[in-house]
Image 1 (cartoon, rainbow, N blue to C red):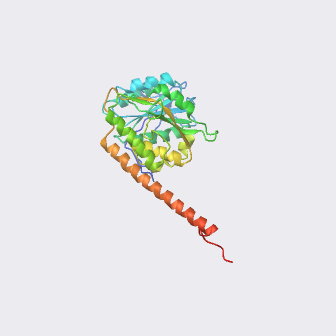
Image 2: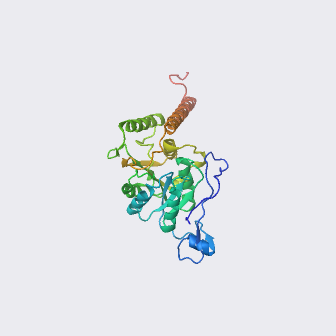
Image 3: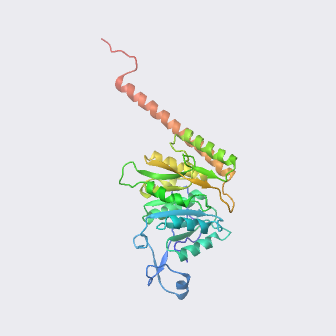
Length: 326
């Protein structure tokens, strides 16, 4: 049995625009030596106890890597192996959206075999953004210090993750990075096996995002990220209603607007070799449309703030060019 599993249909949290899932629950045998409950224990009818953030003493590590999956059965084992080869102390939460190819079953087996792995099952394909949001909530409840986003298709280089984890800051250090992005478009970054058309689309999209939103980030659409948990916890994630590229832009904007430092680490991004890309025209159009709306709203706020400041300055110092009467 998996260490974390959801059952039943997803439910919508009150006041939230994001489709979420029920709280994941994990069980262990009452007589276990720090081990997790297996199917054999269930069949034998032994008792179980529910793991809570307070009672879970198996988590000596404070980094949680979140990997959403949908039809990734061929890629997932390789990606997980590379992850633990490079960051053996990390914990992993696999969020599977009811993959018809059996990815969820592979995640179950991994969670059964390795105490560092948790599997969460959702009903239906609910989207990348909502998968990360439910993963963030799961990790924050359990007291992790760093939450990592990572794709299941092998495009994100696990060997760069130690550098990203070293770069992400500590809450006690003022100005330290709260978000580290594995970036394709900073010096040292690159893409491999991409058609030129897709590279142009990604570069142009990031330039447009940078100009429209005024974000000091070269790769705001990147999906390989390490967040400081305290910074995430301070955001109102219930208002996030974005997916794909748009979700990553949204989260970058929220972190910067909250006053946090964002840093980019160069990565070599490799196009998947197995399976089908989840990128679609709808995801690209959503990103362009929302970035345009967000950009217009930000510029309108800036104009209003400038006019308010100008009016206040005039009220205090008098109209420009006016002379005092004698």
